[in-house]
Image (tube, rainbow, N blue to C red):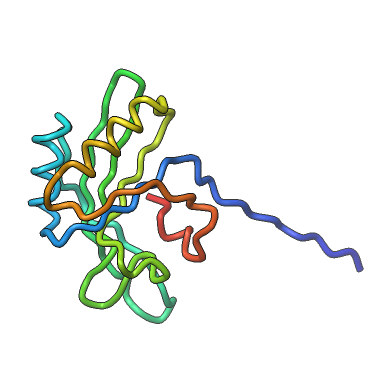
Length: 139
């Protein structure tokens, strides 16, 4: 009998920034909006099923869309009361997911602006392919 195998690959075509900041999500987004002239707004939580027998875990999510270039920005909380979105990065508080092409100069401006905010301890680019729990970042 012939066997057919289905090979799945995740579409991780986005830029991932890890942000460590001891702030509430709405305070962080307000500070980012003010400093970097974005307009992040609260949207429905990002829900992830870790176990099929248990309810989904919800992580707060903020969104901003730039029509010119069709760039989407998401801020997703990495932790809630039940656990972490990306458990292997338990020191990270938030992730910024940027969909669509972003020029390197714009990315540098964004990272520099984030790191200049006094309440952000660190903001750094991360390769999503190196994460064990990368499928949790599919928004």
